Length: 79
Image (tube, rainbow, N blue to C red; front, side, top):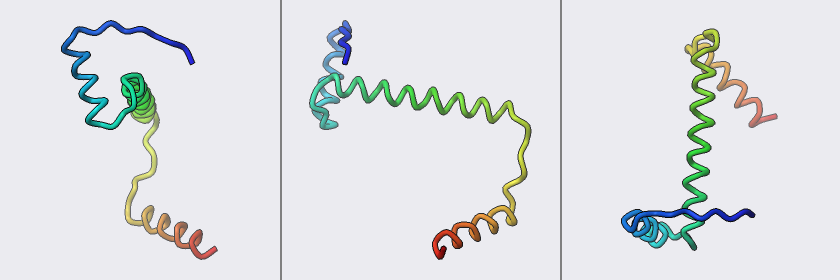
């Protein structure tokens, strides 16, 4: 694992320290890693949403679609 040093103003350092205690992180590094992972997830989701917005329209999710979906789920439960 690589190391990265980050400089923070006192107010942000205090905030991070509070979050570590309140949220049960072992270290400030764990807290920062979690923030970065969440940002990666948001970035990935944004990309997927943009891909979906740029794609051709699909079939409507109407009653027939959901009926077929229920049938497939039931078949997997019993099969």
